Image (cartoon, rainbow, N blue to C red; front, top):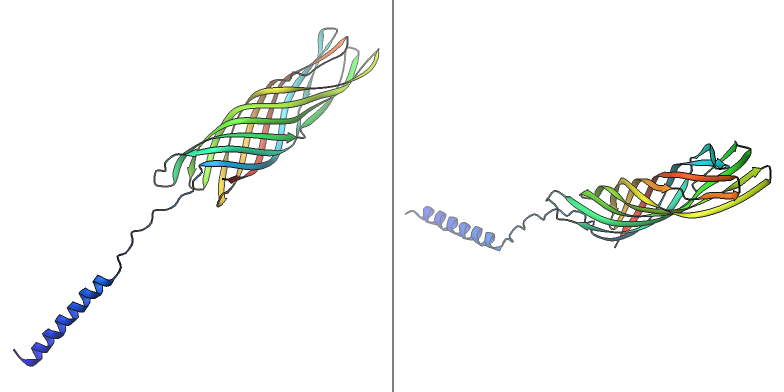
Length: 242
């Protein structure tokens, strides 16, 4: 074997040894991390602001005979706060997961309407106002990572004031009475987790408060009975998740 060949073999062997040693010293490549999706579970507290528009009828009786039907279309601004809890179930690996929740809210309201009537020898000016209301609802939706569309429904309650002045041949009588309402609500919305523990939402609720309950009996010959009260709620809100 020639001298040149022996030198070439020695250099090749040395290079092979260095390559194996270098490969042994290289750190192993870490496997890719699984994507991290937003977790909706836990308590949250928030505030909201929106508007409402409703409908209620009233029947006016004179001497026990229904002589007129007067309608109210109360509307106004609503605002308040909400408190709730979500349970998020395991994701399917694509960021989609079932979310179940409970939420309670309480709202102040400027919703009101006024009307006048004249029938059976009586005239009047009437005002119908929803002063406050609240709901206790279940929620269910499918989370798409940071987006949560949902449907919701449950119990609704509130307080309304019915007041006005009725005038007959005997003179004018003013009145004001309030009563508590109880009914149900159903609706839906979408919530977006825009930053860390913060989320924003848009929501619509249809509320059925049942029969109005407030009557006027201040004049012996005149009676006013309120009928079914329904309401539509549209609002935007923000939540902070604990």
